[in-house]
Image 1 (cartoon, rainbow, N blue to C red):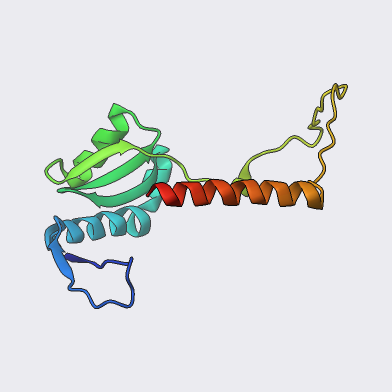
Image 2 (cartoon, rainbow, N blue to C red):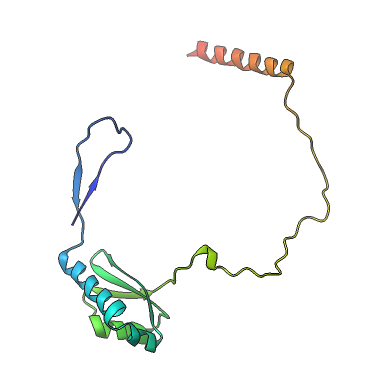
Length: 148
């Protein structure tokens, strides 16, 4: 496998590309495919019966990572017995959730401060004040330009 990276800062300017060889090889891709097929297609019920949920599989560096919940020695050893330890690493999986699945209590109450202690009204500068401020900044800018 190879990755191609291009400079995106100057899109109008032609640039040469750099092809970088990455650590994935066909054996790891094949191993991940074998694991996915076994877990998610052929033997899904076996994992369910054991109470194991596989949250992810993926190639990391030079091994295939298998994330499981609950993660414990017994469950990890079960996965290692199936696929070996040579190019497989079993890790604690994290179950993905969507924001919409977060439970919010129906009787949730939002609390606001019981009393507002201070209010401040801010108004835009008048035309004369704005003109004075603009003149001041213009004078400072001219002074800075003259220094350099």
